[in-house]
Amino acid sequence: MVRENFRTDINELKEDVLFMMDKVEILIEKAVDALVNKDLELARSIVKLDDEIDNCMYEIEEKAIELIALQQPMAKDLRIIFSVSKIITDLERIGDFCVNISKEAIKIGKEEHIKKLVDIPKIKEIIINMMKNLKISFKLEDAEIALEVGREDELVDDLYKDVYRDILSLIHESTAYTNQGTKLLFVGRYLERIADHITNICERIIYISKGEIIEIN
Image 1 (cartoon, rainbow, N blue to C red):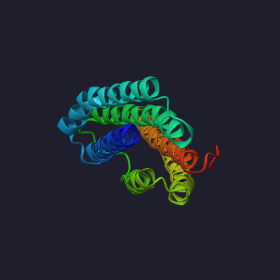
Image 2 (tube, rainbow, N blue to C red; image 1 turned 180 degrees about the vertical axis):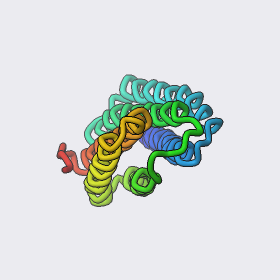
Image 3 (cartoon, one colour; image 1 turned 30 degrees about the vertical axis):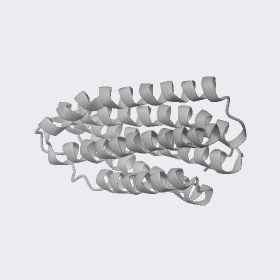
């Protein structure tokens, strides 16, 4: 009976992580949409939501510590709990980057964009797809799906290079583009870092599933 209760506790811990993943996915979507659509109200609302992500992390962290203290888990259960503590830290950092993107959107304000934003929304779509499959791989503890998700980081890296090259080209063309161009470069970098953190989570899921620590890409 005790073991059954512990399994229930583990499943609830995973559900809490999936809930946090849902919230982070929504933040990614909204942060980029706020930038593209110059929606300053939306951008400001994302900045205010940062505390919710932090609170999710703290609550899950407390539950994980309690499970270790009271249940003394072994083998795979311990791997899950240990990995969850790492995963929620990555999710919290993704939330921070969403806030950073929103702050850049606020700084740009209603200015006309120096170029049509094409690659940044493309990066967002890749990242959202990564998040959706990340949740599946975590729920199923599926290493193969996690590996596929992690490898998509290369697509983000390639698009980020395109953003970097295009913006720098504009800045060199005219110093009038420097201010906003710099902000867009930051946005591209934040998105690239979000993909890195998703890849970190994929590596943790592989560890949960196989007990192996690997580096993707």
